[in-house]
Length: 94
Image (cartoon, rainbow, N blue to C red; front, side, top):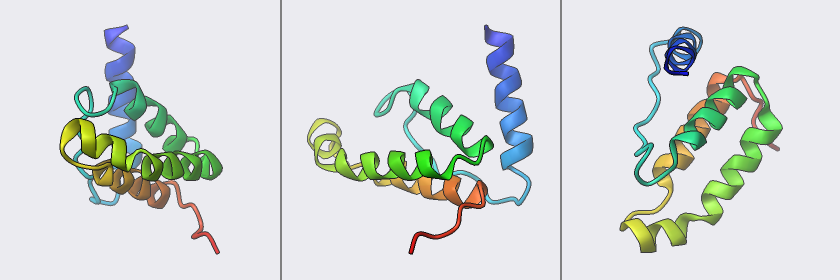
């Protein structure tokens, strides 16, 4: 399992890191489950714009709850998903 996760991470770095535009920092494994990053990264690689937009709506919706439980909102997660939408070449919503 560790090898496949490492391979996935390396593949994502190669695919997503091409432009020198690094991902915004997010507290994976603390504020958010590490599985959230895995799910988002898969959506980015698959260029699944509709699902990324749904994740963005959820990130906005959980802002108040994250602020209460962690002292800061979900702005970091929102920034990561917006970065992912850009990396996946998703068109802007009208």
